[in-house]
Length: 172
Image (cartoon, rainbow, N blue to C red; front, side, top):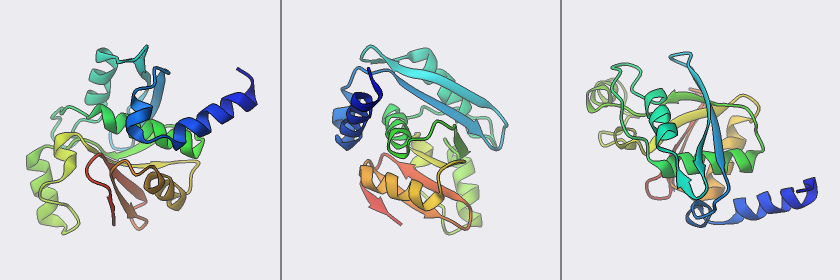
C-alpha cells in the first residue's frame, strides 16, 4: 500500500466510531512504558478479527495494580481506544502508563487521600487508564481523546496525564 492511500485509510478508520473500528480485521499493535514499574511491552493484541488471549494476559499483567500486585482484566475496548488514540495522534512512541487497573483497596486508599479519585472508579473494572505520550503535548492528547468520543476523558495538566476510559462519554 503506498503512503497516500494508507494515510487515507488511516484517516477514514480514525473517523469511524470506535464500535465500527472494533469490527475491522486489521492487526492492532500497542506499546507501553509503565512509569512506576519500569516495565515495557510492545505487542499485537488483535489479529485476523480476534483478540489474542496471550497478548491480553500480558497487558493485564503489565497494567496490574503496581501498589498491591493484584492483576485485573483490562477491557479490550480500552485497548482499542488507545489504538485509536495512537492512530489519531500519529505517534509511534509507547504510551507512558501512570495507572491502569486498581484494586478496590488501592482505590479506597487513594480516594481517602484525594477528592479527585472516584469511589467507583473505572480503574477497578479495567476500563480506565492514565497516560501520556512523550511526543504528543498533553492538551493535544486530551483533544484527540475527546474527538474519539469513546468514553470519559479527564485532563490533569498539573499531574501531567490524561485519563481515558470506556464509560459513558464525559469530560472533566
